[in-house]
Length: 240
Ligand SMILES: NC(=O)c1ccc[n+]([C@@H]2O[C@H](COP(=O)([O-])OP(=O)(O)OC[C@H]3O[C@@H](n4cnc5c(N)ncnc54)[C@H](OP(=O)(O)O)[C@@H]3O)[C@@H](O)[C@H]2O)c1
Image (cartoon, rainbow, N blue to C red):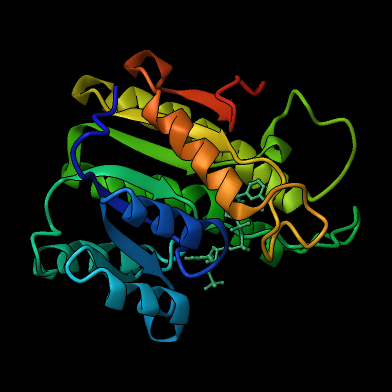
């Protein structure tokens, strides 16, 4: 069970917009310390405004999840972050993701498929592996997956690069859960619902604030036996 009474040390990927930015806002609002990572910190205006309002509790660091050399650079930077933010990580949110829209069978490009796999599957897997020594015993790793990666729920051909990569992320989630079980680390795949972000589009059902508060409530209610599961924002199991 997560101890919600003490501030947690959290790391969020893809934090400069969408759900990632909302995770940062809500974690800060509850008193947590946050390492917010993004590809271009110098252009992350919303994040940099938050830094000013949360001295010592929010640090913005560069990370491209699809480029493992930046994982190593992040690891080197962690001890240099001031204010004790290099303490063990209690909550890692692998949020960064990409969806290449408009794909049609017959013309799927290897570049889209490769980029999706690197960003959505191998990136979070390798980052979690690299950060494992920095994770606190009993930590939580939340992988932002999608119902579109559910093999059992796939009834039609759509968003193939995204769906294949999220299915791979789901396997990565289970494997990481097994690898980290001895340290009491809970690893999950989470489906946020269809959310109004750049990825979800203006017609989506949910506001980012509502999706993120629901996901954080699911994380708060976790039991170690939940590790390796695929849950929606209500805490219900999503079929693999
Ligand atoms: N929105 C939905 O309806 C929905 C539904 C199910 C699952 N999800 C999942 O939820 C997560 C967040 O989605 P969102 O809706 O917030 O998407 P979004 O609005 O498109 O934002 C995606 C974020 O990921 C970052 N990103 C992309 N590639 C990256 C890379 N290689 N390295 C680091 N950061 C990278 C982007 O950074 P830049 O600004 O630098 O591009 C951006 O901050 C994703 O994993 C997505 O698959 C979303």
